[in-house]
Image (cartoon, rainbow, N blue to C red; front, top):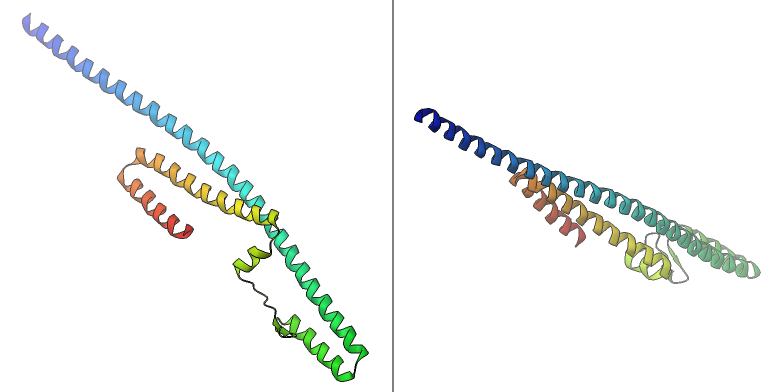
Length: 181
């Protein structure tokens, strides 16, 4: 009888241990589900921000293209004025004006100035109107936010996946920081 009582106590203890372990696993599973839902929400938010950033970047590119076209039209108009003035002068002056126009089209010098087809980013930023520059800056900021959001999402996922994933997240973070620098 005593042996049966002892066996029952052992079985009850074992059952309690298994119940606690099961409860612990269920709690961990619930926590992981919550983290996953939060990560999914963060991904959706990041996607929305990416879409907005793409839209802003496209708008900024369109404004930049229009600005460059306006600069080109202004340069063409200046050359046309030079050509018209040269027409009033001698034939040699007219030939010189035509040559200058061809040089403008090729991106070469005009009246001692050099017109480059490809301007540096700093020069372009200086020439952008304030609204366009604001949109370009906002698009860059959104891109950085998206990048950091993705890293955070991966870090959250990495806490459930182990050391290998955390190492990958750390590598991606370092790579991202180099790109942003």
